[in-house]
View 1 (tube, rainbow, N blue to C red):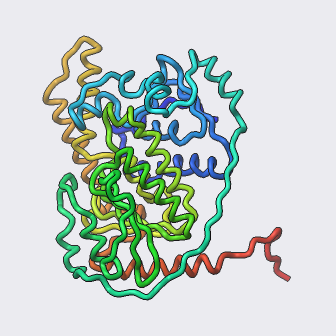
View 2: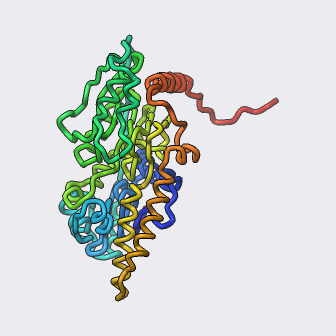
View 3: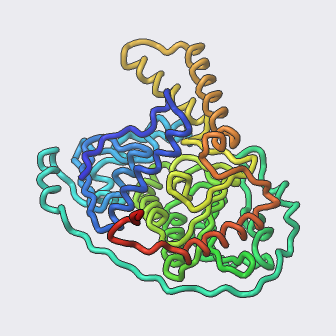
Length: 398
């Protein structure tokens, strides 16, 4: 049982290793649910950014009228990221989430009422699944030159990229069978083969929206059913934010995607190709979600959010705090604050910093991606075939 009130990451003392390893919290919540242990959450106050997934990853969610708030981006961050102006109640109030987005299951009148409801719903879950095996086939090399991978990803992670160009240069015969092509187009899912072995692939042509999260969840579950390993090519600045996306259930659908990633029963391999920001890192099987292997391309960037976005958010929060105290924020101090935050974020999101902190399994040449995948998939197959025999006792020496 969780009693939630969290504003998410502390941007003033931000460290990239805390952000990446923080994914374990969400993974553990998802694993508890899969193990048949119901997670009941009372959201007493704000549940923002990562804190929103602490709510969203629960099996039963109780929200308190006039007190509970759940959103990926609060009003300051929303204004910094998109320029949209919205109140906390409009973005993620208890009434909106229980009546519109469907994130909340129960609407309590006060904290005491919420705890009463929690006592009534504890202990109600059952779960099971089975997966038949898939078979490998012969293969042809890609039709497109891997050398061209050096020019696919731009230096500016905000520029759009068609990740199908990457897929065409690593897949057998450059053959890609896309899943749900006309739904949630910013999230690309489909089937390829690497040296004849089937592989599911999920990648991004932008932020993840509710439709994309739903599609990815469906695809992950389908891969588990057919025992097909999954490759995540990270290229996303996170989940979409804004009033319309909150009302469309972005937290709810994003939580389903994280549930699927956390509980997948097949080998999962992650490659950071471009940006891997915020909860998008979690939904795309970041290091905190224990992929079998995790690699980075040299231009990859990993962070809770972009440095400029974090700086603008803290400037808005600081300026609002000064106004509440009857004062005015000093423009020079705000500029210094923002500059320091941008420098801190830019320094820590570098692939050579994250890799130095062992937040991946190494930086690889993009041209070697196919060979690396063939190698690690063979390791995964061999490891699964050599699963240890469980015993009731340890081996004793004579």
